[in-house]
Image: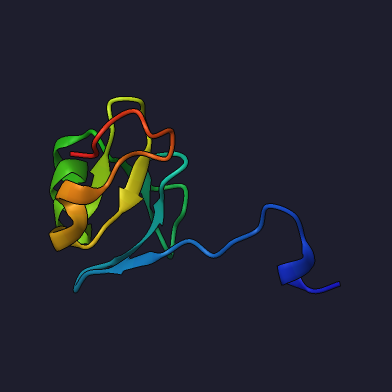
Length: 86
């Protein structure tokens, strides 16, 4: 069995900064250090808000998050189709 055959497995995107690298966990809404995944920054913390802007992460009032190219932001709706991501 290969990793791609396992249900629900996927690779988390990585945000690389000069001082450290973070996994971007959209499900938990956290940036997790690659070298120490127990250390994390929540998206809604002051540092998390800054990192979200840098990583182009947008969120919706119904708690859906996505990584979106900036020119597309105004055209994107959440996966539930209820809200525009901000």
